[in-house]
Length: 133
Image (cartoon, rainbow, N blue to C red; front, side):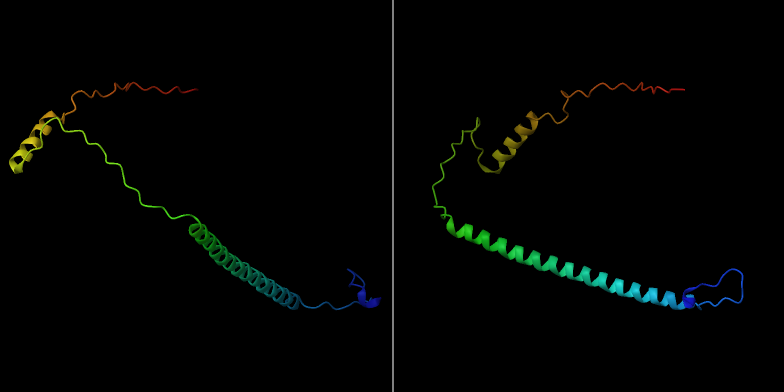
């Protein structure tokens, strides 16, 4: 019972237990912290390994499932495509280089490059902000 008593504020004759220096307590705490870090790293590493192994397993499992679905389904048979009806052009096809250049010139004359028919919208540049005092 006497070894559990802490030194009083006053009274020099009372027995007391000597306490360990704080340096030893901190060293013990450091060892506990190191062990906790090692456990945390171990848990993290194990979870990482489980994650990768699970991903590989699921990838292989799903790939096998996809391959099975492909082999079960019937293969498509070749079919003849219906011919697309092409309407004849209003002008006969130009022959030779001179005819192609003339046809291109006629098309360029018909195109409205300046776009004079397009009218930009009217914008109101009178902008006012309501300021509350």
